[in-house]
Amino acid sequence: MTSSAALFRGQTPLAVRMRPTSLDEVAGQGHLLRPGSPLVALASSDASAAGSSVILWGPPGTGKTTLAQAIARSSGRRFVELSAITAGVKDVREVMQDALNQRDLYGQSTILFLDEIHRFTKAQQDALLPGVENGWVVLIAATTENPSFSVISPLLSRSLLLTLRPLDDEDLGLLVDRAIDDPRGLAGAVTLEPDARAALIRLASGDARRALTALEAAASVAADDAEDDATPVVTAEHIGQAVDRALLRYDRQGDEHYDVISAFIKSIRGSDVDAAIHYLARMIEAGEDPRFIARRLVISAAEDIGLADPQALQIAVAAADAVAFIGMPEGRIPLAEATAYLATTAKSNAAYNAINAAIADVRAGGFGRVPAHLRDAHYPGAKRLGHGKGYKYPHDSDIGIVAQQYLPDELRGRRYYQPTNHGTERDVSARLEKIRRIVDGQ
View 1 (cartoon, rainbow, N blue to C red):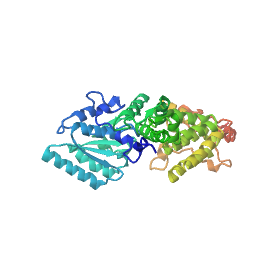
View 2: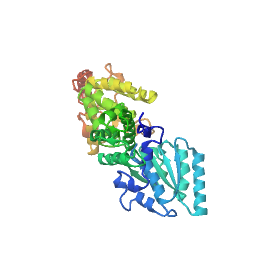
View 3: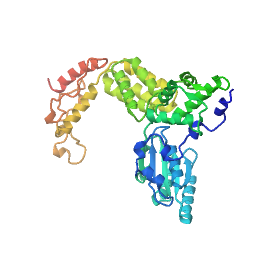
View 4: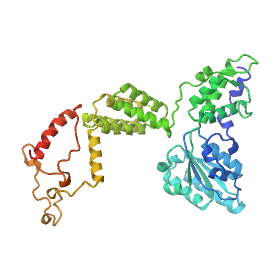
């Protein structure tokens, strides 16, 4: 191993060493760091001044922890960090009491950084409320999950919700270049070829931590390959050796998320099973929530397949249950099974069109009164009003169907469900034609 390679062994990870010490060093998130913004005001305020609690929501590697620590260093406030993975209600209450003492005895305010707040239980989040509401602490909470579903409403209403965006290519390039030259980073011990730099940016997919971790690993590989006394040069091949698989450009909160799921559903609808499986693989490898994929399969089974194959909905629901039961990575198998089944079976959107047409009529005022013979006749006085009078009980008929009006007068004769001739709906279509003739008294 060369002397250069020793720089990359047994030390604090590069991504940690390169964390900014002030907001001026933060790459990206310009929409949150404009002059006068809440984060800038919080960082530049006096240690005894008030500040707004904030919840930072964004994908991994976008700088949530970095922002919290930079604010603490810049403001001179007391900084306390808790992890939702290890902290309990008792820990939260102790922090609150200490913060109150610091404020009353020394006039010093406390920043409480809470990582992964979505993992906190309701009781743990409730324990935060007194300190946040009374200003004992300024809470900076970080989460990768939608706070609307993972943070209690009282805490949301007392905090500013700030959304972090994935870093763009320019931001990632700035971080990589800084890590190469900065004394805290690689301090110029290696050089980076343009193709390797582009590969790092592409593979990072907007995640700064991922870019720096891959750079550090690739630099180590380059150092091992370098001749004695020669400055290691990181190439695209070194990047490929350091990263054992392609890291997809895929943002779970961004356009790629919606583009891929759209292509997935449209491939199923278009009966292209290979394309559907491809997009499923992209979502799985990118870390998409498998519950989200399962929900979309259930919707697809009802919307695009319907009664052309009633089994499709059962298979989609079973896949969703299986994913919830066994988790990932094994959950990919029932997801693939359901995807293949839905893509290759008969299709019909007749039920989907039927409910949409009926809802359109109702919204337009086309609902009318329920026919008297169909109204509830079980409560006292109902029969005196004529409810249920003349109702024909279908089971009394030899064929189980009777001629009778069911729709309101205003919609009599309206047809919502128009079955296709695809799959089992072909049989439904033939049967429905006979049923409607009998019901209409023809």
